[in-house]
Length: 330
Image 1 (cartoon, helix red, strand yellow):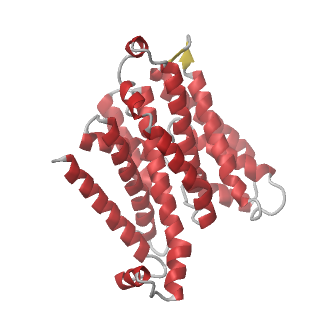
Image 2 (cartoon, one colour):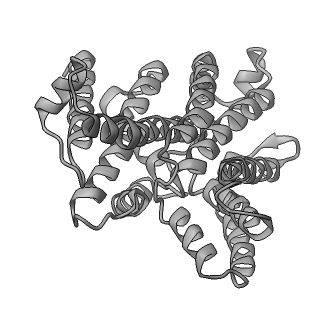
Image 3 (cartoon, helix red, strand yellow):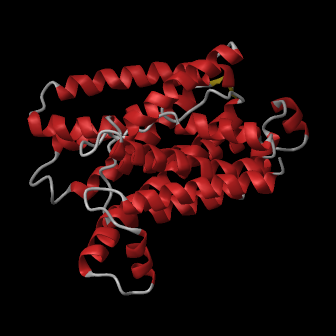
């Protein structure tokens, strides 16, 4: 099948999920309501539901799904390992630790300082990934074969510290933390869109301008050095960009795992190894996965809502095991 046709199929699937997301929920809308919005003839109740509740959540899931997918694509290129994923190597644990520190040491009203939470989550996730990356250097060279193992071990250690702090939490604090770790997309208002989406798009633009370097990382480091590339410098830049993308995403979406693993892998199955095609297809598939998971969680047991992170984990866990057995290595 031609790549154009494959892209068309993915785009149509994403469009179907977007439209279904916009018209379903506690306050159901019809396609006529959507048309009335386009012609500026919708009632105030329809406008309120669409623009104040559904649109910001939809934008968050679309952009954050894409960010997690590109973050995973970068990590897999740098580590030369198809099993690399931001959640697996400790981003979620680090961001969770930042959330725990925020909840522990916050003063005053939680509502007044709620928008500091994404910043703490972002800083925690970024620092943990940079720590894992630093520990993966041995003899001055990045060791991709131990990168994931160090990430898993570090994530377990950070999770231990999280449990130490949570032993002092009250019910309200625990409820807030549980929403984060369940992957409940709580940053679904316009202020969260403004403080996360522009930065994610900017970082993704930087990543796009390093597509050539990402493609070349499939070669041996010695060969790349012979070509004149500063391999360690390129890997550091890409790791930082990956950490920033994933940390920003989980800071408003909660602890979402496996999208960074699944989306690039599906992209490779569909489009091969061309990095430019992988970049754009991973964006679309990552957006489709997270938005679709959020839609499934909303519909499958309505009116109860299952967090998107749980839906993704139910899909991603078996998928990760399949890849693990297929590759025969970590």
